[in-house]
Amino acid sequence: MPVQTRARVRAIVTDLGGRAETARALGVHRSRITRWLEDEEPDARNLRKVEALRFVLARLLTVYERESALKWLTGFNAQLGDRRPLDLLLAGRVSQVVGAIDAEEAGSFA
Image 1 (tube, helix red, strand yellow):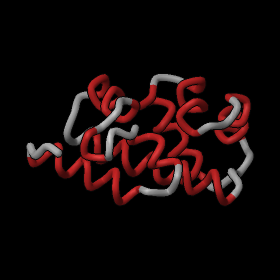
Image 2: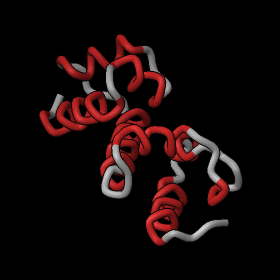
Image 3: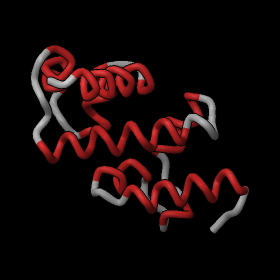
């Protein structure tokens, strides 16, 4: 696996607080996280999820402390039509989630 991908997965594990939490967030079995951290490359679909989650977490952590960021990511959000940011993120709707983060940062509400 390219070191860059492994580093992204490692960063997500750190930000989310563990491999089990990361597996839940990405919708995969936790053994897959272990394999990704060792030597296996995620398939294209999972690689997109890893990259999207890493990007959004990095952005979100500029706005909130870790615990608040995790609650925001998994809670229902009025800016997103009362949907969970994580669900939209994993569906590939990264720009909507980033838009909601921008709105939070600007202090606007739905």
